[in-house]
Image: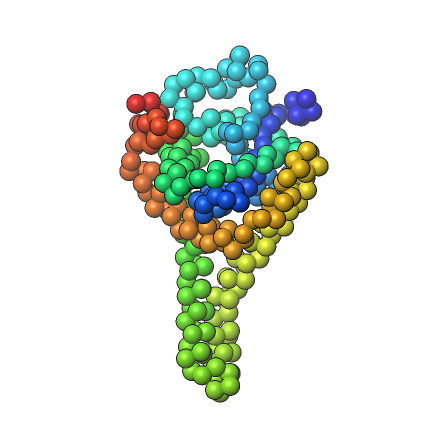
Length: 282
């Protein structure tokens, strides 16, 4: 009710708060880290640019009056409701409200497999090659490129930095350790190229910030009535989160290429095919 009175607000939007199962598989963590970017967007304030299709609310009149051609775009091969809405909001200067209460604990499956995760990641990037207008295409392809580029930069930087530090430290150990007169060697690991250590420190700091954010969101959800959420967050293994982040975003550029060269995807047992941005059910 409050949101509809905000000037130029087209929809209210929430975000998923993924909670890996205590008895689940590592695939839970692989899925969780992909959604972390949405939580970061959620933390930016009352209004945002991102739309999550799993939790969005529009006024009924927007559908009844086909506002901005919303319904027409759905009916003529539109595949991703959230990306269509995000593009419309950008094109027509509409607001996407993000009330702080609209964060939803999402407890993950006990039996999610790596195959399920791969299909999930394929579907997430598949939508970025669907569009309903030239503007929508530029935005979605732009997001796909930026996501792929940042994923490559982040994971390659982490990999290279970890490798350099590991090799340097290993050489000190082989040299006999500090007592063997290799104190200078140990200092060389630190001073040879401090950028590597700074990269790893930045990654560790980002994980620490994500952990703190999860604790704050757990308190919010607890106050909103979820009695188990604080304990669920306490059970999260943040070492696994870090490893899952590296794996997921190392894979993203390859999935992006797959998205651009393959036209089919399977969702809940149903095959879909895209052609010139439009999607048909097979």
